[in-house]
Length: 167
Image 1: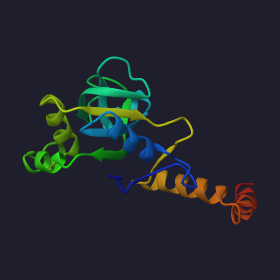
Image 2: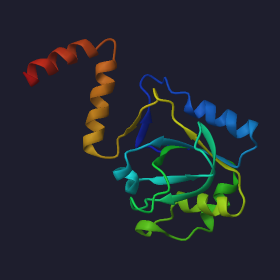
Image 3: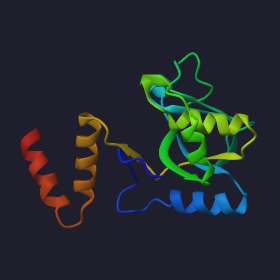
């Protein structure tokens, strides 16, 4: 599952989904979820991981909390909008009651899975795998500029244009 309000990496350089699928198979996981470290004050905007033990590159989830307060957050590892699930997720979603915002939360279904003994793993994005949140205007515009400047054909002329506009 790839949430539509996030892009990971420029020019399809991210390998996160490939690594997640491989980990799903080799570890016989029920689910693998991508995570990124966020500043502590941003945890209230995301599903946040509670790792079982140390949060290495790949780790077991002890819990996941949807949009906790800064004080309630067990870590600063935020869901990075990529998931690999077994089909059991559909049964869990069907039995999940509306949560925060009056909506059925994917995080609540995952949390139930963990509490029932499911093997849910987390995987951190690599340093070069920047996640672009395009769910609001500010971050969408920043992502557009970054992608446009990285374009080999149009990037140089946009860079020149921006220099003129910003001078």
